Each structure stands twice: as C-alpha cells, then as structure tokens.
Length: 314
Image (cartoon, rainbow, N blue to C red; front, side, top):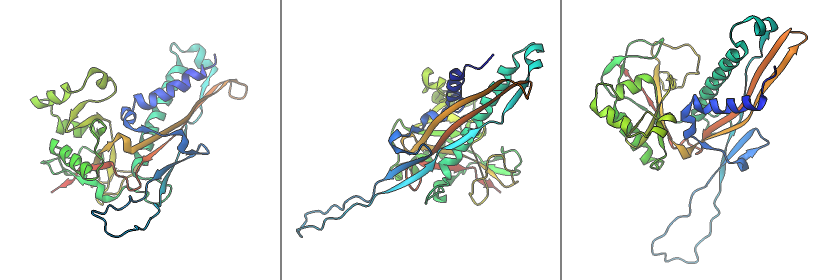
C-alpha cells in the first residue's frame, strides 16, 4: 500500500517544530529574501544620519547611507533509504512500516534541530560568520558535578541570577523586546535553576498558561519564555563550539542560549517523502525523506543572541 505522500509531508513539517518547540520562537523568513530557492539574504541597514543640536552651518552636507547584507544557505537534509522486505509487511504482528518511518522522521527532526542550533552561532556563508566570544557569558554558581557525558570535574552551577545576567546583556545590546525573549535550557540547567523543592519554582511554572505549556514553554522568569531540550551546546575551554556528535573532552562544558524571537530567522522549504513500492530489485518497499531548512541570526554581528557557558570550577 503506497504512502499518503501529502500526509507524510505535513507530518514532517509538524514534527520539526513539535519535537523542537523552541523553533516556534524563531521568526520565519520573508519569501522576498530567498534567492533561487537556496540562499537567503538579510538586508543590513547602514549607519543612521548624525543628529546635530542647534545647527549653525548650512547648507549641511548630504551623505548617502551604505547598506549591506548577510547571507545564509538553506540546507538539505535527507534520510538514508530504508528497505522493508515484503515478508515483513505480511508476517509481522505490528505495522513495521509505520514504526520505521516514525523513527526516521524523529531522527530527521533531531538532526534538523541540531543543524539549526549550529547555524545560529556559525554561518558558513559570508563575513561575520561566527558568534563573537563577547557574546558567550559564564555561570558563577556553587561547584557541582559536570552533567555533560564524557566530561569530568566540577562546574559552576546555573542560577536564576544567570537569567538576569543574560537579560542585562541583551538590554545593553538594544536587543530586548518584551514578550519576544526566550531561553533554551539543558535538563541540568533547568534542575539547578528551578529545583522542585523550591516554592518559587511553582510560581515560575504557574506563570505559564496551558496553551503556552502545550507549545513547549516550561517556565517564565526574568522576562524569558523558558524551554528545555535534552542538549543545547557543547563548548571547549576556549569557548569554541564543538560539533554535535563529536568526542567530548574531559574539560568540555555545556552551554545554553537566550535570544530575541525577532532577531533569529528560519527558512523551512520543501519537505518530501519518497517511496518505491514493490521494488522488483529489492523485493520489498523503499522509503526516504527530504527536508530543506536553514537559519541565522538576523543581525550581522549576531546581536539578539547570547550563550551562557557553564564555567569550570576549581
């Protein structure tokens, strides 16, 4: 029986944000900014005109504003084709096809989310391609065991005060807009900031409406909508970002990030399910999926995005 292709296309799109709800708090690209379906350009306004108080010299000299642009690519993610022998569609007591395809869509969703998190801090296209280290702050709490698998030693715990630190940083960047601010925590960060035995934790949870909770928001604190994900970033001692899936060094530390919804952007393009039913050479069915998606910080120097690295503790 063939797939309902349109249904699976919709399922892929839905899973991309359902399993990674923080992506709903990233602005969508304007279709006018997509070039040839593969590159997105973000216009960057030049310096504003100077303001003179009580001007005495006229005529004033007109100046032309020079604008720039930031580019990012729309990446293509594809799953390896999966083969389901005809015998397994007939003899098994469960729907093998549904089980396999659900698992592949979930894995695809995970890869896309990690790709997007990478694109937000490292853009391989154009100048100003990496988040500056000045936008990477560090925790300052009491010593706790490192929660990053593969690392060793003590780290400085996350604390509510760190959220205030992130807030102040973004306000000084002129990147703070009420109702648009978000933080993505790791499970350890959430546990340390919002311990279950703390009465104030219930207050932060109660501030979230039922509709917001269904959309993935766990807490509200210091003006941020707070999401939790199994992992966010892995950073080396020198604040460089480690690739997802890379070997964790003993001195590596995890990191979380805060952002302004209007200062990050995502472009979700084509999603497609492929099938070859009753393949005469495979004696069964073959399926695969494709997703095209990209993203970046909207501003040239990554304003509106800040990382909090869990600092090493002696």
